Length: 507
Image (cartoon, rainbow, N blue to C red; front, side, top):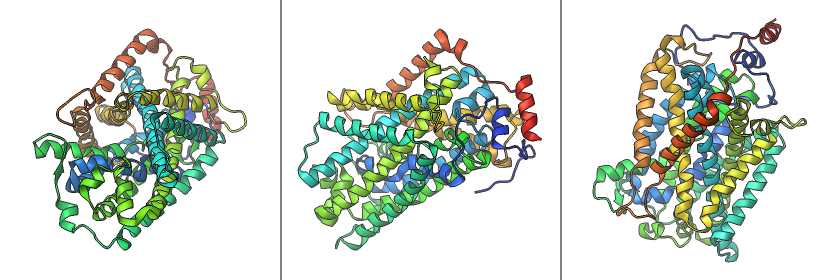
């Protein structure tokens, strides 16, 4: 996707990636071994239509049904693409591992950056916990089909811990392996969607009609308003379309970062949009028993569709495809979260920052940041031993933290007007209409995130996203007042040493 370029574009023509990074105030430390495709692949893997779309499919069946799922996916995907384009433009100007918070700091000042950083960081860590736990649930369902395994909360947490250890080990081998795995992940996801949809088209003798798939409205939320329920149903797509800031977080390890990271964001959304629509349509056409799918004994409605349409053998094979895709997703998410921890520590925002910013001498990987990300994700999952409601309350930070963090740099870029100097990937004259549309959409879906989803509202059905939002704001405010305003420091290029090194790079 390309747009007319701003007269201010190509602010730094001819600069190497290292020179551009120095111009932004940082010395190159990370290993720059990821190409443009690898950068796209990490965001595509984090979005993971075979993770979010499959995990939340049951939510969609209950909240508006097929009509809202399919048309909602189309509409939400379009709005997310606009947001991604607006964010890509700012990323092109500021290609650093800090990504969103660095952009906000440069465009709005340190306090904007600090709050954005905490939203982004806790959202990424909550997403890692939620994604890995979802993988553990799917793994438990597969083990149940294969060997009669009974996935109790303790056993599920054990599977979750094994997954975290596996992902940490893979991430410690360096960005080159991460890039290779993400490249494989792209093809795995696309081939997986093709296999799943193909099997669901060919094997079952019965399929739902097109009028059912694109027009059937269903509501088991307890709310009576179709408009309200339909709006809630949009969240399936919005939950899934997250994590594409990974391209920005890996920009210091990507070649031609000013263009590659921007394109990585946009292309990952486009391909996820198309493939996700095909997947949701294929699943919905293959529903054999609507009520039975929602109330599946497996706890995974998509798995019930596989069972009803293909039998136990086919269901196990397709579930295995989904589980491996979810592992790819979680692996990419850990890479993104650990780079955020590294960058935020590099700028003095986290307690014990010198510890978390250390790099491996051999791989130039932020080893301690990887282990911190894994450790926090495990702690976030501990409430699942006692109550899934408590666990979902903790990980609600993911959905309420990530999306607003995307909009803040875009809003500040719009507020800056002509003072913002774009990079080589620019929206040109489309920047303002796309940017303001994106910001308005984020305000709308943030309100949706906080609305009650089930009636009557009880302790178990309460939507804890609003609580998570307040908790993040209070945490960021407390940390800013006690230490952040003194310790948090975004570098400003301009010292004699930096000018000398910059000039040497340019020459």
